[in-house]
Image (tube, rainbow, N blue to C red; front, side):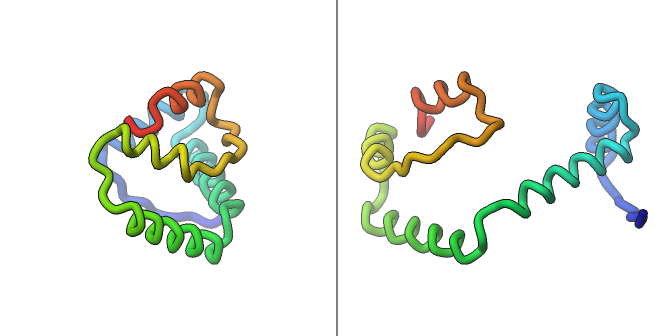
Length: 105
């Protein structure tokens, strides 16, 4: 296994130590697990070309709509332009319900 020397703020190390302890792991094991999950997540994310297409479409929509000044205007725009997608596994039914109630707050 390769080794990496990592400098981090003391408070981050303390937070990692607490989380590692809660998971009955060493700090090294916890960091390795967290990095592995992050890399695995990012490897399955949308291809860069698709991201660039979405960004271009987003900027075009923002320019077309002009400034949004109130939450009600934002809700109305979201209702008109919202694309339905399957929620991520991490989004519990309770969180999805909360987002539906307050999409822009």
